[in-house]
Length: 326
Image (tube, rainbow, N blue to C red):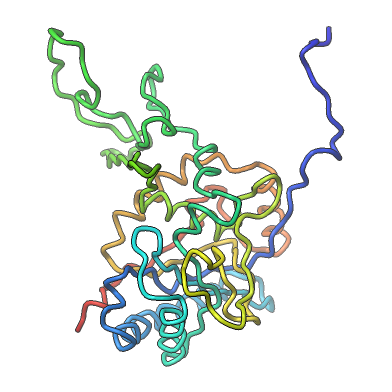
């Protein structure tokens, strides 16, 4: 018997899930904070000098992962933190970055704004990802923990007693350790704050925005079937304010695609905890299955091995912090 409440819709009336151009590898040449620019262009030159050998190594490694005769497609990007602190002007910062990179034989193909991970035009990428979070409940629990969109927290396991209030006069429970859901003999328990509620509204955390950034680079986000924050060409002049900039700008008109099958981020060691939290977030994002299948089939058609797990498509180089070597 047909459900009277059921609705039917022509398949052609559903939003078409658009594909995005894909490189084989997206290399993030850096992610610096306001204080990292304090030393001027010489400080930035030291940063890119330290990054350059790893770029060459990544290019060589990628060539070995592709079928013989297939040229690698690599794009580079750089993320500017304009979400937590506004500083300088786009013209000054981008000019110094491009010059410092060029002095070390590197080209920044795309520049992205961290604030663009929160809002890109009329689209709010951070909200899109929040709507697709499926919290990973520990085995044997009854789901009493509030969902992440209410609590602002994600974990990779069972939170310990004492993490929620107990009724007055109840017997104190014996201490029990937190437990990682997919532990390998011993647990590495992580709790990630993804946002906080502030007087001016919701403030997204750095790890959460970094997770959105990785999903954009992997080409996994859509809004009503359309790509989120597609790169925009650079104009004749830069605006005075960061908020007037697109979320992602193509600096190099000859660049390979911004999104890629795999990503590599070259970061200072101080980012390790943040990127561990990124893995917790991405591991609990329910990516649109049609988007996932599109990317998988295209990779197979190129003979390019691609793990199903999105976290396994993300690589890092954590090195010393050259911007502090004054």
